[in-house]
Length: 257
Figure 1 (cartoon, one colour):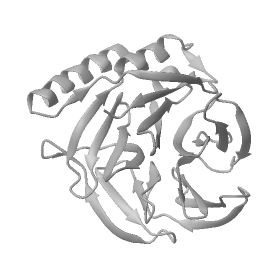
Figure 2: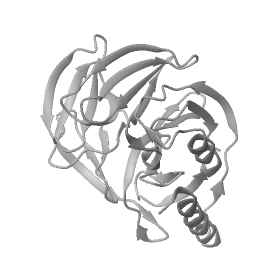
Figure 3: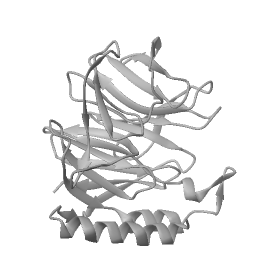
């Protein structure tokens, strides 16, 4: 399916969701910050004035530290032996998922030294934290809550109009709600963290189209069809989300309401 045909399908789904009572919000862009167009973004979180970003692809994966105001890349740690995915901080550690290697890379938050690897029985997709648990997606409709040893504590199913919402990718947690994107979908969904029910949808189709139209057909040998929305981090004090995507030229700041 071409990008434009896909966007047409998405708009049809949006109209159906709105008809069934789920609010559809087209958020205003507060600010844009430059993003490395070579970064195949897989995960993002914010701490103070730094964005921590996980990038994927074989032999090109990394953990990055970026200034949230300028977009300047301040530190990069290659993890070329795996295809990295979602990333989150819990207590004094950073956890980075891998896609098919089924391990979790663990770093000391202060030094960014890798200090451990943990087992993951599933493929890794998205990751966030509520301050107590790691919250994990695996490409299905199931969201898992795991402790700092990556042991399963509980799980929920994400549902939209009573039906499972699959291909859940990067995640963020804020005020009792999960915010996430879905693979090959240019929307951010808001769901209740207890019930898994989708409460609101943020339509980012215009932003995605703007990014897509500015890209070459091939980027480092990869089709721009893969340059999807992926990466959400939340400034919990301001209630502002930072969004980006694979090979995107910007991080976008949007309000969550």
